[in-house]
View 1 (tube, rainbow, N blue to C red):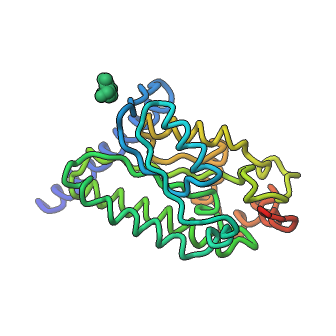
View 2 (cartoon, helix red, strand yellow):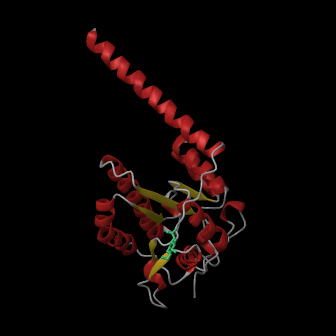
View 3 (cartoon, protein in one colour):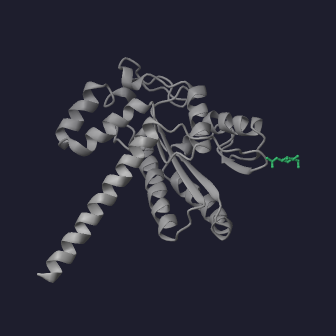
Length: 243
Ligand SMILES: *[C@@H]1O[C@H](CO)[C@@H](O)[C@H](O)[C@H]1NC(C)=O
């Protein structure tokens, strides 16, 4: 009887904590327009800075006064390696070499550029999806570990855009609105904004968040039909890529 009461109390408490965080998150989305943090004089490492998003984000951060360290292991003509699963291990290695000093200082921000392909499995993107799911997993596990160690000074952000017009996805069918290519500048601006506002999870365009919610709610076959309906299943049929 006594035990029953204690358990009930703990469940009730957990329930109210849940409601509290949910309302807080909703309030943040609806009413709070977060102040953007200053990145002036901060040292920021940008990997993949040789092209596409890496280059765009590096330029923007430099314009804001940050000291930007540019990294790109992929020389010209080596683009294909980017699509390989090995890519996900390289980001883990980079992280490992910098995390120690961040932990010691309890300060920093780790931004993972993943993709919508890290949330949804898409036909003919098996290798790409594998590496992007790995990136999202890395972000999730890292976030959990930082919280568990009470390292609240280290922020984490994951960005999941759909197809972008950087050239990497040239030829992807743009018939359905859901797969119309995103403008590279829009994505770069959104990434910098997400960093400065300490956003945790960003899907681009924001409307794709709806698919994510539905994925969790709908039966698997239903989700498959949704993806087909919005043209995502066959988006790669006309793929050409970066030449
Ligand atoms: C950045 O560094 C410059 C030069 O040392 C200094 O004048 C400026 O106040 C610094 N800005 C911030 C925000 O710390």
